[in-house]
Image 1 (cartoon, helix red, strand yellow):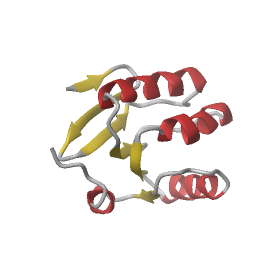
Image 2: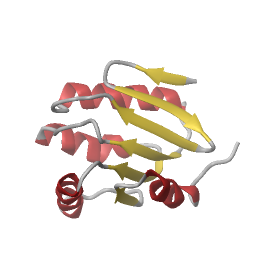
Image 3: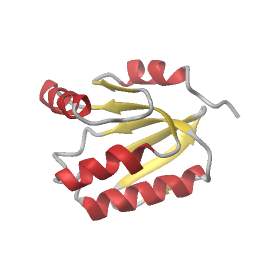
Image 4: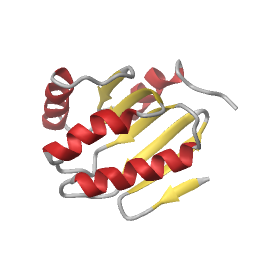
Length: 125
């Protein structure tokens, strides 16, 4: 099963949940709530490591970031965020240092390294 809506594409492959945002200028709270709802529906109550591709996102409101830090982590074994540049990497690193995120979380600019990090948390079916 896969989900492809106006905000993101998500699918399960090799025990990892792939979550790729479509181009979004700014994630606000309603968008954050919708994508979490869709992801949880896809997961059907099962925890997965999540590769979250943020390369097409330009920003997010504080309400959306706070919501995603808590509800966005539900049913995740680990999170790897994929960003496109050093600026995005710095901003996300700063946010993660000041926010409590429960599952192991790392930020990458290389998809292969992100997948290598997530591989130890995979659920192979």
